[in-house]
Length: 423
Image (tube, rainbow, N blue to C red; front, side, top):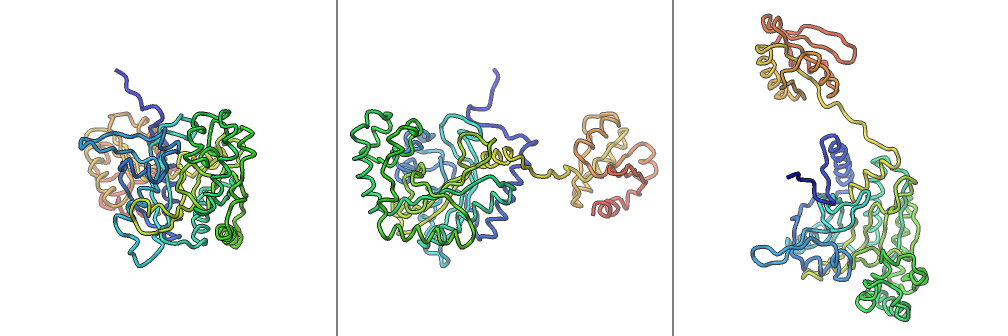
């Protein structure tokens, strides 16, 4: 029987993982500068956590979650997104009592959604996200957005834009909800079954429909911007003012609603503008989510955050022709020509590694020419050649792969000599 990787997942092979590691390194560096510390939550949580926070009318909850019953007859779900687990941890571990607020964290790890596989979209995908919980200051919204923009800048992207909207507070959304129902109800039969089911439960989700997004009713739907109360409008103006102050350009999109129910006030997406990226242009998205902590039994703890897919970040880099420079895999490759030389080489290999030198050798009993080809493939800076004469004389041959020069070095000084050459 032939086994294959599950549909909608992928193997990331050693030839590609170095790119992921480089992105992860940039993420850690940027988050450190902004004082966001890493948090790690379980890969699965109680199903109700996502139903209560993400929203039971969203596509994620109704169509995309991987849910199972464990041996204790409890409903568990592989996490489809990262905010709900982070807020759960914030409440459970009483982080709201920390002296320094807001609590600023980032996470990185696999998420799971059962959706149709597309370029850069998988059923298991790696998501990076940040959350700032405990502050209602519009400036922290701008900081979160700034962190996202800085990350894309640091990996070399230039073709992207920030799109903003305000979803308002509860009062604003209730007024908008009534207007949406009045707008869609007379012609609801023209829309898909999901939209019809959402009309009374959560009409805002209709605007997020992937099936009817081009329907004329969508284009003429009441804009939330027209229903913002004075407080919500003032909040949004402050967010925009902070972005203006730090020179981050943005576009306004009154139809931007995001696909999760917990968002309110600021909502944003960063989109690729590269012609080679594809039809789905969103690189990351997020916004403010006041009320989530209270929904799961915690105290009032306003929050804001965003998430992005590492797969789509790498796809955007590819679309723009941007790449990282790959470092050499090895400092030293040891070539041995007979059995005694192989034993000596293996002992030397261990000494080099203990001295902090990246080294490897041949384990396939190949001829010298084949071993030298391996050294080339690994981009080894130096090759050590050990044959019968070198064993007898207590020396090794050092070959500089850049200029081809070669010299004999005594066994007792080989580590010192290599450290000097590798500086």
